Length: 303
Image (cartoon, rainbow, N blue to C red; front, side, top):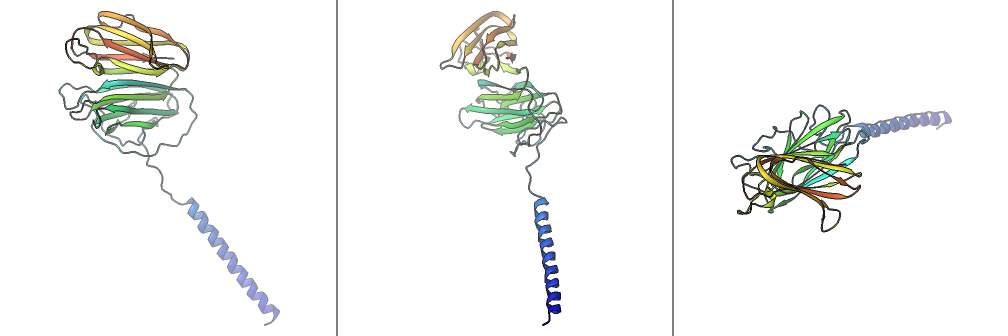
């Protein structure tokens, strides 16, 4: 075989190799850029705030949340958090049973500032196995709901496109269940403030009314030194007592308390100085000798 023929064969083989290399490169590139599985998209309002994977459901009513939800991965952060995170937990609060006449869902409202993670979670419930319905919505969005023993939305987000978003959370016992719960809130805000609506202020010295139906106990972390405040009103005139305790030590130590006689609201509103970085517990109790059920509204703010 002469040199010319070998040269022609080499050229052909070289061309084939080039074609194969190009084809392999295109195949690899196509595999990298092709369609891949992605996390389930989360429901959100027009501002883009979202809950941790819950499917949309009807808005909660006085009888409580009505739908269940599925869990999915959180959205990918898209902005830098501008406001620091605040945390507050309502402790040992008994819920109404949705199957009971006149039941009211405990309702919590707070406002987020700018972008950041939002956590809404029942962290404890008793007796064991009791079912809770929780619903949450942002601004005018459709509510997202879940049912379970310790339900929540631990991986929600407030979107950066809206300077301020109002979050509304409702809790009620499922069916005939009346669980006692702790519910924790964390959210980005410049001025932490949480409003409780449709609480119970029901005290008694003659009947076995549990503390879990008598006002509330809430624990918060002060981010800076300043004044905390409590405003509250209820539908039946009662004697009331407010206690503020330092919960950063065990057992908690009372730092201030104030009593109110035969009133339907705190006048003047309660306020007291708190120190930076400490945990505090604020409590409101009915001290009247009655078991009359009163609908309670309370607003807690802290630095």
